[in-house]
Image (cartoon, rainbow, N blue to C red; front, side, top):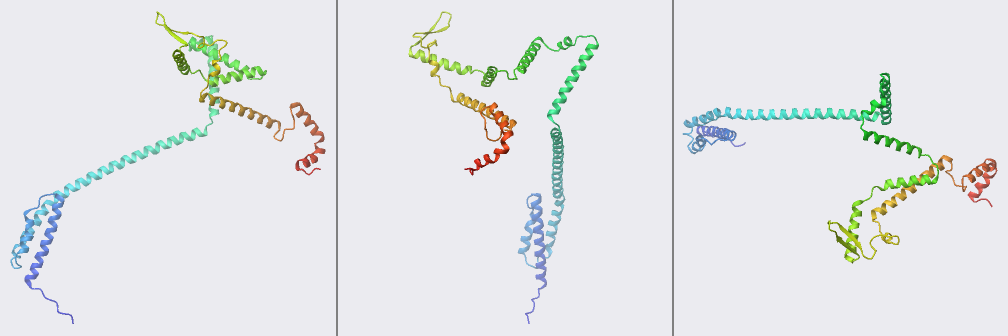
Length: 335
């Protein structure tokens, strides 16, 4: 049989109950001190004093932990109120931030929808049709204004000229004259006119002269000639600087060959190569287009246009007899 349980005496039971109450009071005191961040009270020393007494004398002193618990319970409402206020403030701040984020998201979605609608409308519309519509509207407005002024007995050209200055009118007339001349030059007349057009186009593509580079090279040449002694720089009474060529080698004459010693920079050479390649590509493109229009995608069997027409005439009459022979020659089976 298991050993009998040891029974506790009455003083031991009282001492155990007192110890449990002291432990509960300690935990309550520590929690209140942590929340309110205050100095510990004198009542915290009561558990140590009571634990050092005998079990018989601990019963009369049970009122001290109850007093400490009452004191802590009186301080708890203020601490809980401050904690509740801080929590409410944080909740309000979170709510305000959430509302701001919601408003920002709503405005962003509305802006995105508006931009998407504009993009869809732009893709659905044809730019060429819009341009043609604007041109027709301008022509109709011009005709309507002209009809109104003529019905009123006024001069339309005089009325319209009031909106422009003399310089603007001259520039417009010059532009129209140049446009008409360019329209007349589009058709091919002769090879000289075509070469002139190509030359002018190349000049336009070259751009303007580099005056800074020219001035820099000129000053370098003058300094070099002055250092060599072939050029003398004299200052006049008016303060003007004059360069005097002593042996006639600095300034160009009919017998000068200094232009042959000029070496262009790499950028100019690259530009020349690019222009030549561009002209060659344009020529090949036109040739391919011309051959595609004439149906000459196959091998070229003619030397000029007249020979081509003669070969086509022969083919119309004799291709049905010579087709097999030509195919055999191409296959290499003809002996």
